[in-house]
Image (tube, rainbow, N blue to C red):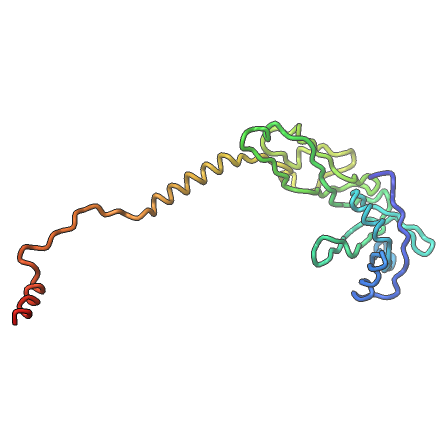
Length: 229
């Protein structure tokens, strides 16, 4: 965790409900709840611009000042608007700096592995954040993954070198990044498509059509007889 812990001034919210919180956000404030450590939950309002700037930097821990008292709080949950692109509510949990917690930390990929330099290869990032367990004071702002050290076509969670005191709790066999050869796949798909087209191609009949018998059909003879009559 960064040594810098943002300080948020909070005010108690006396009124709740979607209509009130909408008016609150219109004034540049964001609704939040603080709970945990055996104390009663507190519904508060905090500065939206300040907290969003800190979240974008990957910060998880804040000093929240409320009614003259300061508490160390960990971001536990974010509620997003119906479009899914804006934070409209935050849940804070009271913690102390030596408490062990599990948090999701963003992954920052750098570099290009040798395997991705082959013709037709594409580098994909399978996950964007990692669940880690550590003390509150040791929470990293992000996890830096240098892909230039990637051996082979896949890098797994178990290959990460994390800071002392930080342990990954995500599946160790989960892929962080992988290199996929799309050129071979495209050629294979084209060949498969051509084979399928050949299998369903219409049959062309080239056999010579049979000539009618010299005497003609019985039906034809009957028609000629009727005309003579």
